[in-house]
Length: 396
Ligand code: ADP
Image (cartoon, rainbow, N blue to C red; front, side, top):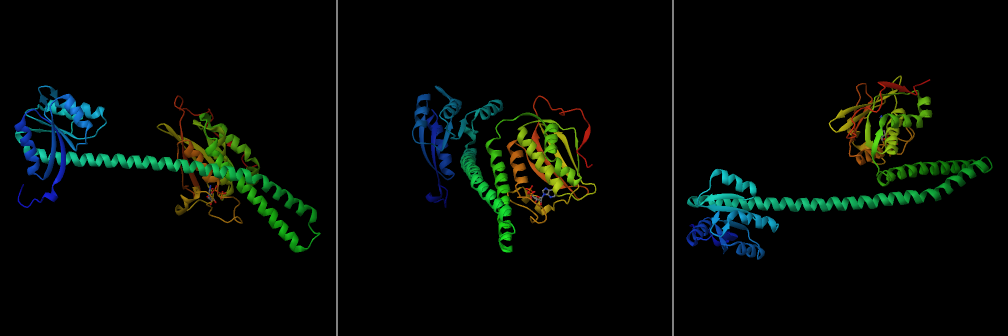
């Protein structure tokens, strides 16, 4: 033991030593002990001894001679792999050509040390131990992460279920409240006092607002429940359908909606219509330019399409660009702009369910550019139709 090396500071090391030469074995153990290891070892010389040895108490390390009369050191690598053990194995050998050495490392040996240079043994063992520890820590962190992801998915699922059931079951009693407050308002307006008219009007308004909110919540939780079937879907048709659903708002606002040629993507048609409808609907609601415009275009990026919905509206300041995709987050009061703050949360959920991403940037003239990615149809990455551009339902 070197002067000053206290027994407590020694690193405990259990070694399966595959070696037939007793004096070589002694030299290797002595080299390790000299360098601060508190070694306990077991000798093995045959396949059976190695296999039974590894079945016993776990070893920190296997040291193996490359060529024993009845066993090749590299066979121990095979045995370790068969038993699913990640114990490091260092070959300690009289001679090894560099080609053989590389081959052994490729097959899974951790390192090799020549018997006439045992000074390399301890550093190699320390490195092997620390690499194994790191590998084990990484594997356990990954297992922990996988467990957390699974827990999160389960709790998300439960939340989604809860949101769906509660919004679904709330619809019926709310329909009663809305219908009867509306009836009260129609039948008794002007027949009670002024305050009663005011209170009934508040109740009607509240019930209608809650109905809109619950419908949106139901739409939000349905994205998670009914998003299963994805097939080649024409975005041109989805945009046209969305525009048709928004006909009244487009006429009223005078917004000019245009689209470039759009592709087929792998997706759910109902959800894609909803996605475009929410984005175009927002461009209409938050319009500013004269004339107000919104254009939808697409660009291929490897195996996905990036779709852009660009308007010349009021724009969104950079500090709010993440927040607007969160459920119930709005930047305006209801007096300024109507809405529940669910539209973009629904868009995000739809896009993510298609394996894509959605974000917003500033438009050149102060409007907003919403960008989203959707998976291209594997066999066909062409555009959905032959028209260069069209103007849909423009003002007038
Ligand atoms: P809602 O439209 O019901 O308020 P959304 O989730 O659709 O809810 O949008 C959240 C917020 O993001 C909006 O309140 C608005 O402030 C902002 N926003 C969304 N789209 C646009 C747009 N095209 N231009 C400017 N602001 C927008």
